[in-house]
Image (cartoon, rainbow over the protein chains, first blue to last red):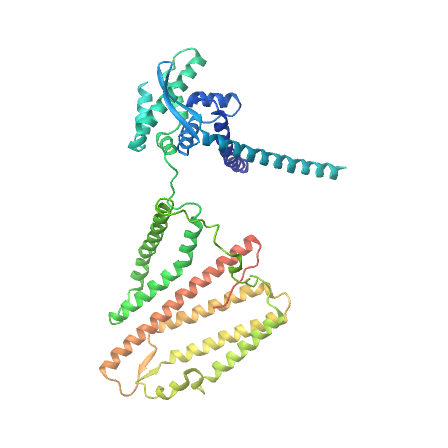
Length: 123
Length: 336
C-alpha cells in the first residue's frame, strides 16, 4: 500500500519535472524541421520518449505562442504538417537553455557539497 | 482504416468547429505514420487488434481532444485560495442573516407557531444558492481577466507593514497573574449577580422605576434559572481557583471546561422546555394577553437559538480536542 502511494507520488513528481524539460527538448529538436511523427521518433532515439497524445497538442500550443512555425507540405504523396523553430522561438530557446544550465549547475553544486560533507562525516 | 476514421470522428466531436478540420488532418497523418512505423517493425500489415492498440495507446477521444483546447479553469489556482477564504469567512454571516430573516418574518406573521424544522430544512438550499452565486462571481472574474481587462497580479501591490499585529500564541499556558486576575473578575461577577435580586438597579439601571408599572411579571422558572447560573459560575470559580494553585492541573482544564459547557447546555434546555416565562399581572387586557403570548414565544425562540449555538460550539470544541490529541498539539477550549 505504502509502496503504491510512493510510486504514485514519484510518477506525479516525475511528470512535473519532465513537463518543462520536454518543451525545451522539443524547441531544441525543432531547430531542424520535423512533422509530428518524425519528431517523436527523433526525440525517442535521443532517449526522450514522449507520448504522442502529449506531443502533438504541445506542438499546436507552441505554435500558437509564436515559438514554432508550421506549413502543410506533400511528402511521400501525403500532406504533412512540418514544424520549425521560429525566430522568436530561437530567442526563447537560448534564454531557456541558459536558465536550464544555471539550474543544472546549481543542482550539481548542491549535490556535490552534500556528498563532500557526508564523506567528511564518515572520516 | 475504418477504425481510424471512427476514432477521428469521435475526437472531432469535442473539437471546436474553427480548428476541427485542420487538427483532425494532422492527427490522421500522425496516426497513419505511427501505424506504418509499427508495420515496418513487424514487416507486415497491422491486424484490426494491433491498429486498435495504437489508437488505445494514443488515448480516449475526449481526453485527446481536451489536450488541443486551451487550458480552462472555472476558478484558477491563483484565485482559488481567495475564493475559498471568501466562502469560509462569509458563511457565518449567511447563517446569521438567515436566522435574523426567519425571526423577523416570524414576528411579522404574528409570532405564532414557528416551524423550526422547516426553517432548518430550508437552509441547505439557501447555503447552496450562496455558494453558487459566489462561485459564479469568481468564475466570471476568472473568465474576464486577461480577456476584458489586465490579469490581476496578486503577488504585487501589497505591503508587509500592513500585516495585522501578532496574535498571542494559541494553546499557551495562561500565566499565574492572568489566572489570578481571572479568579478575581469571576468573583466580582458572582457578587454582582448575587446582589441583583436585592438591588435590581445593578442590572436595570434607571429602568427599575418602570418595572412596577409593567402588566406582566416573571415566572418562577426565572428564579430557578438564576440559581442554576449561580451554581454553574460557582463550579467554574472553584475550577479556575484550582487551576491557579495546582501546578499540572492544566491537562484537566479542557475536560472541566467541557463539563461546565454541558451543564450550561442543560440549563438552557430546561428553559426551552419551560415555554412560559412571563405571567399576567393584576390588570391585563385582551390585547396585552396577545402581546404576552408573542413575548413568551420570542423568549422561547431566543433560548432555542442559544441552545443550538451552544451545542454546535460544544461539538466544535470536542472536534478540536480530538484533532489536537491526534496531532499532539495542545488545543484551546473556551468556556461559553
